Image (cartoon, rainbow, N blue to C red; front, side, top):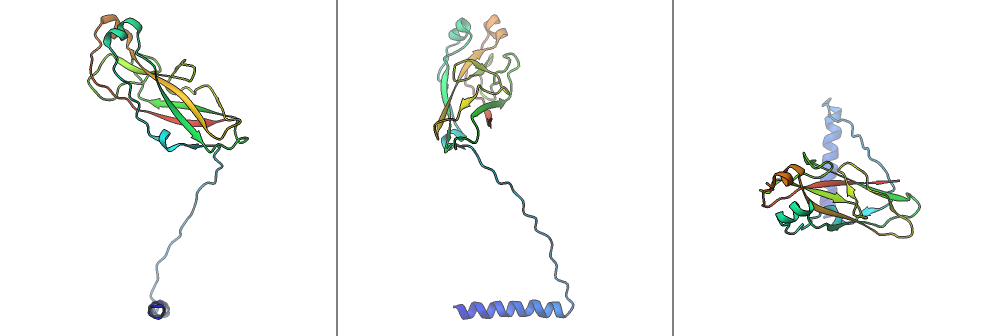
Length: 180
């Protein structure tokens, strides 16, 4: 088998040399290789990369009475953290902003109207889209579970007019982890 490959290689090489000797122009170009070497302080756990949070059922009466539904927890897990590279991590959520509830996430699909999704930090304080969360310390551990909450909130005008439309809904938010 080796002899067959050697014969094929020598024949191919011979053809290239003969082509060059006969004035045949061989075409080629440049290959540019580039990249970046980084030292990531943590890795995003696979289960945190793409999540689906079940928000449950929210009664319209709850939105009229309290302005919002129950806060549903979700977690972003950072693992294999290297202590000493950075001291803390912050999360910034982005997405389509609701037109009435400042900093909240608009519904992107479904039949429900008159409400939005509000995100909250680990202390259950409101967290606006585009706003960095309070810092999560990266000291003394290689894994960190960053806890957040989401809740359905009524739009002020829909609450006042009592015209929140029940139905299904969904929304999408992206997040970026920044280190300090």
